[in-house]
Every structure is written in C-alpha cells, then in structure tokens.
Image 1 (cartoon, rainbow, N blue to C red):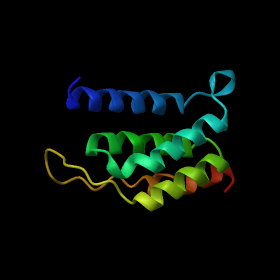
Image 2: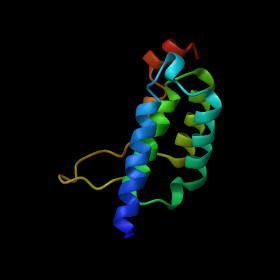
Image 3: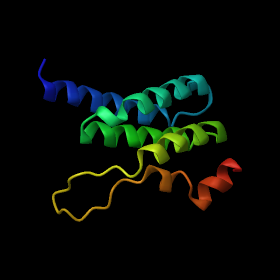
Image 4: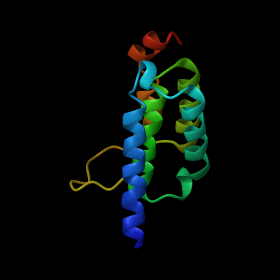
Length: 113
C-alpha cells in the first residue's frame, strides 16, 4: 500500500469518526469511546501530514460539541495544537482554529459551561 493510500484511509477514517460524533441517543457511543479517540489524536496529531491533521481537527470539533466533559478534553488538545495551518488553492484561508469553534457563546450555552 502506498503512502497516499494510507493517508486516504486515515482521512476517511477520521471523517467517519466525525460523523459518529454527531450520533445521539442509543446510536451514540459512550463518552469513553470518544475520550479514547481524543487521547489518540493528542498523541499523534503532531506527526501527521496536513490533510490528516485537518481531519483530526474536525473530529476534535465534533467530539467537543457533545458534552462538557468531551468539550474540556477536546479543547485541551485543540489549545495545545493551536490553529492548524493548511495550504489552500487561493492561499488566502486562515488556519483551522478548533479551539475557536469549541468556545463559541452558543456552544457554551448549549453545554452549560
């Protein structure tokens, strides 16, 4: 398997995890499931290529919107990582700031934090 194929699989896997972060009710995995993924992202995001880091950032954002506990865990990682720089076609996009998305007034009110 080539490196680009591995990166595509990682990108897709994190995309699926982001979608799972939106599940609610009986379909939703428990917090422990998400906390384990936050830990894995924390341990590996610094060594991943740009596209995988962006996918990981999306997962942190999705997980961090679920509950106060998950928000705290995802926000800690997002702040440690900082905004995720990426190359855009226009060259005019700002870095992906996950912490900014996890600290909006709307989300604070929703989660009661």
